[in-house]
Length: 636
Image (tube, rainbow, N blue to C red):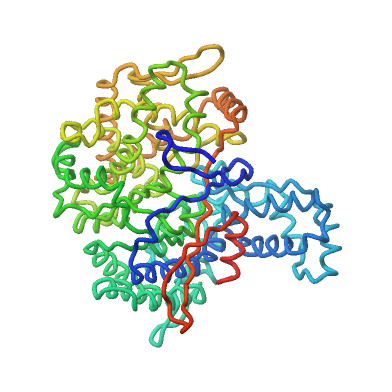
């Protein structure tokens, strides 16, 4: 059990699985909700769980088969040699944590510790006891061959192209040049394949009396059933919002999803959800949405910074370093809340994000603004669990240690909230640009959008209004700069067996820090064989951040593919292998995890003797495995 920097919130580290730390997600305040809100949360959580299996299939053609094979084989524990069982258990935990046998961040394939021989001997035994799965020659390659289907998302292939070298299931029998001139009718929610020389879109939808069912109809049908039950616990406005979401899942029509988002943006309920095919990082082409389900309620105790930044959104836009022609007029103060996450499934969990700005469509952001969530319990748990360990190893000067400690509480929420509200929500594109900037920036869009959001966050954390109003102090802002440069060093621990950065957020961090190092406003220095971060000049660093931010905004606004590609390739992809090796070695020495994943709670209905629902109780899962087994049992 670990405590936070102020010794208030206890963070429970349940176990280590490969490089991941598995944390118990801390939740407080649910018991104070009304029964109606608790029931709404219950059915939204059920809807989120019902779609979780979709992500396994989106990730990889063998994703569900792997999940079922290894979850089921664990049921035969007493017939498996102990040392082999422990290896299978480790591999299974990693599969359910990452929704398949590819790392959740790098999307690179990982291999088991057990051998083919050990697995085959185990199967000989358990097959006589009722185990039904078969280890085919193809499945052997899937599990054991490191050169077979290497990467889920490959944006910089050395051979082939971004479609053929990416092994997710969004495209089949397609090469990139086949898609020249192709316009997706269902950009977020379809698979694209070549059949008899014709490109075919297979839409993901449940179907209804007027619409044929499509892919994932069973899963989406279960989601729809729970959303209809959730409507019974909603007020009229939210019932209408859920009705549009139901219609979208039934028909798959993009306009219905737009209508849903427009109404969702107008509403600010205590209980809310992000549900559907949302983020497009997994698709190297940047179109298809990965399923995710998140349910949360407002965290009023953490809302001060979030609300203050939302209130200042127009002033921050006016202060942006890019030309006025790219500046957005905010129609109203955006909906922004600190929230407590109850559950996160699919692409949103168990490896969870700290904040989110939605919707992703540029035209919706410009016309209707956005909703922004700072997920306080995820962020607090992830930052607090290992902060002191991190500083002790990677910070050399006492004054830098004090700066990070003093700024710890405020800078995290400020940076995340600025990233989401102002970063993703700001700016406008050249009206001459037809379509979304994503259509022009292609495989680099997600990196450039995360880069723009990160730069906005770093630039505005020194905003005069925020400092004068006490939202953030100048010392907090300085701590934000130092922690950010440090984050580039520590992210290298994740690339022990890799020579490029593939994840979009980490590419963005690399672009920023390497640009600033080149400009000379920050540096790395070595002492006793260890590398440490140093800020040379905070004001100069902000100036350089503004210069880069202005150019990135121009690239997005003009859809300048060549400039965006050049920027990402120069600063965002490659790193010093010698420095990487040093950081990996130091991280292992202190047992610093490469990533965090979260074990959540399952809401259970409580009945009285008359079989009436009188309460909803949160029951914690005890492990990442129990969580996956229960979700499979419910909708698997």
